[in-house]
Length: 137
Image (cartoon, rainbow, N blue to C red; front, side, top):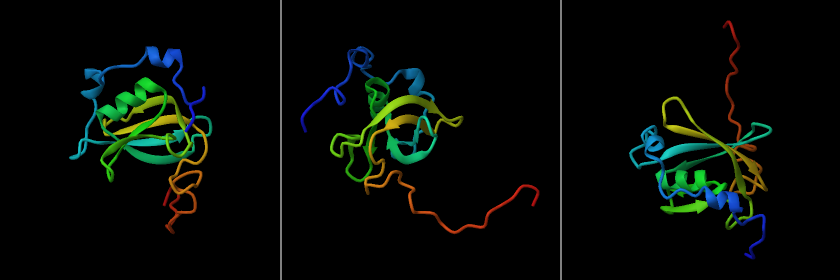
């Protein structure tokens, strides 16, 4: 795919590249048995949940230092940066760690479909039938 200014890191992003995940951040993470942490991806302006992916320390380091989201593929056992093959980019707006340290919330500016199936989110048209609860019941 030809490179253009939208896919190239800016000088500011290149200047913030970190060689390894800071020890104080790594110490807060509670990895699963495979060394991974769940990463919930949310559209920054609408707060719509787009997808869930998995990160290890290296994927998180790449995400924090590049301005683009990188995941670790459990099935392929390799890193993948969202958009490199699909053209559906995720530009990082913020990253937060939950209170238990076992999940990340990454707000992004999504370009194109978030789901590998081509749908806007990984949750489009996948609603399950459930009894709806109400306060006071």
